[in-house]
Amino acid sequence: MVDAITQVPTPSNEPVREYVPGSRDRKALDAACATLAEERLEIPAFVDGQAVKGEKTTAVTMPHDHQHVLAEVHHASAATVQRAIDGALRAAPAWQRMSFDDRAGIFLRAAELLAGPWRMRINAACMLGQSKTAHQAEIDSACELIDFLRFNVHFARQLHQIQPQSSAQTWNQTDYRPLEGFVLAVTPFNFLAIAGNLPTAPALMGNVVLWKPAMTSMLGAWHVLELLREAGLPDGVIQLVPGDGPVQGEACLASPHLAGIHFTGSTGTFRKLWKGVAERLETYRSFPRIVGETGGKDFILVHPSADAQQVATAIVRGGYEYQGQKCSAASRVYLPKSLYEPVRDRVRAELEQVVVGDVRDPKAFMSAVIDEAAFTKITGYQELAKREGEVLFGGTADRTKGWFVDPTFVRVDDPKHRLMSEEIFGPVVTSYVYDDGGWDDILDVVDTTGPYALTGAVFSHDRQAVAQARQHLRHAAGNFYINDKPTGAVVGQQPFGGGRGSGTNDKAGAPWNLLRWISPRSIKENLLPPTDWRYPFLER
Ligand code: NAD
Image 1 (tube, protein in one colour):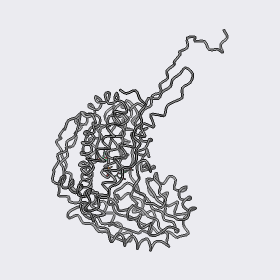
Image 2 (spheres, rainbow, N blue to C red):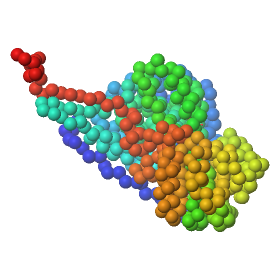
Image 3 (cartoon, rainbow, N blue to C red):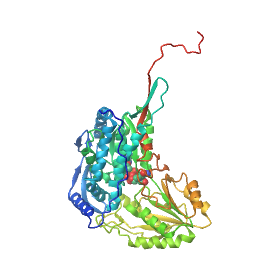
Image 4 (cartoon, helix red, strand yellow):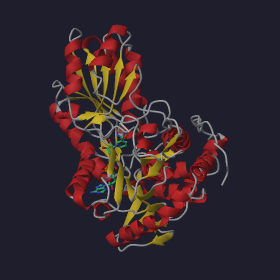
């Protein structure tokens, strides 16, 4: 114990390293990739501080070299999940008795380990397992995860300082209790930072967590768990229950102790989980908190006053980086007739230079999509584009060695076409051309196309048009960009999340998210309790 009102370190965003070929960082990263590529890890469930193997295993392969197995992952059976729930409930009292500073110290240490000695290992796992280039891995598994860990501590401390007023003879306090029970964190394949944040944010607030990562991200997820354990995370606080989802999800939903779900993934999976909770509502001790960040169909809306080169760069970076597999990726573009040709020609010229290849090749700007299912789905959209639209660039794919889909730029004539409204989650960007005079109408089209409202960008040098778009599209995107690509949100700068079909918009890495993992208790202490039951208004 210490008697002190401590101040947590002031966070700042982790600087992004460049990995210039030949540099010390690049050599260290290459060496880490070589080490991981030679290993063939066996990844168990991790329950109550113990490795638990299962009857079923799945091979994790490199998406850009799909015959290369990186790890064999053991699925957690329903019985293993139940063991984890029991373990979590046993671990909870000690974790909750630990002071906030002690809990925070673990996550701050994890951030420092990741910023220093663990950086290359985690980045290499993200590169090989999830097919991210060095830059994409660095901004995700290193910088963003470090930022989540540091900023959450800072925001949690700020929340703790929100305390009620006290009146005469009274001392009022708010106790920021964790939820009663356990939190289920279900994480997607595409960001290791999200995979790390979803279990650690509730844990920081004192909760115990079962973590179910996407199978295709298991190599990175395993190394993140090792990092947290190295930082001092006690057994039972975050337990790993790998698998395809339904088995682990069902086992958690069936427990009366389910206190919350922290989800990121597709809208369909989130709806299933929410319905599963609703169906069992009477069985829970508390109303489970449900937080989900889900799909997107993110737009770039271009005003006639915009700069064609800026727009083209935003399309190439925003639409194709990480193979378009960011929930925030630009996927539908609205171009005025006067800018269509200049933008199209610039996009084509830039995509001509883009190299698609192995993530270890420093020339590669893009690599493979995550797995065969994604490859099949995305190439299906390429075929649709060939049938019903005009393919302006790309439209090709090659599955021989890896799940490679070439950057594809499309034009359609129907602004409500499936290519303009469905989440493709791959390197396919579709454009629609409107008349320069049709700005007011196109704002409506952007707002009403598709079920999502995650990110969006407006490009314009006309301030009036910017103001109009910002107002008209107020609910069309939870993250709205002006003259910038709609990807690349930074923790502490652009809190991330969207509404409508894109999720509950609780903004990961922000105080609003942390609020979902606490159940405040109001405490009133009377310092001088009354001794006479009669009030003054009563006639004596
Ligand atoms: P997904 O929905 O297929 O899987 C997400 C997670 O849910 C995985 O761990 C999966 O195993 C698990 N799962 C699947 N079925 C389940 C079930 N019945 N019960 C419990 N768990 C189950 O999504 P994905 O392909 O991993 O990720 C891509 C999706 O995530 C895209 O739609 C993307 O837009 C979205 N995403 C959103 C954000 C955001 O912040 N809004 C961020 C990243 C990704």
